[in-house]
Image (cartoon, rainbow, N blue to C red; front, side, top):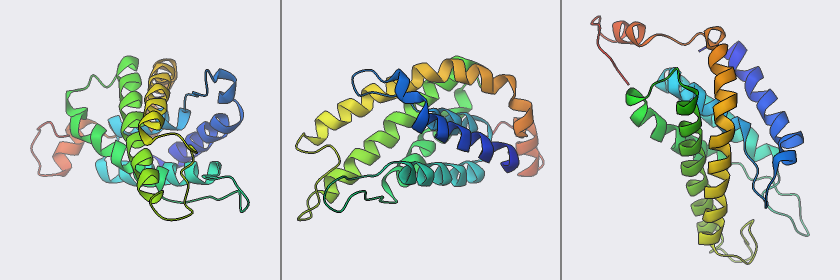
Length: 196
């Protein structure tokens, strides 16, 4: 994967998430383009590179919106989205060998999976942190289960958004410099075998 291509696309997706995607908000649910870009990269790039890319994307997500509001707000906490994206990418890496990678519906499905697993981690992180005194979770007085329901609906919206965006990303996938499955197999032992 070419970082010189991937990082600017990630920044554009982040800027659009913050400035433009709230137009598509429905009932407090907004799709996330950063999730689609990371899911697309996780479907094609080498595992180690994808993990670093997911950490960068999650770090930028943590910096893009304050975690808590209150008397000492805004509070930007690095960790929930950063580790959540890494957790979600691991889920994609474990099943990408059975995907039809040139299909935009696969990009949508993997965007849903990434958003769901990273949302689960994010919710669990904040639920555990709320056990400390004077550490309210970002969702206020509601329950963690209700927040996960919101994350689930957000995952569906990101998955739906991932289909047209995935079509666009697939159209320009040659610019990303992804290795072929055969090339990755040969670099890891010289035999032409399919790897994940």
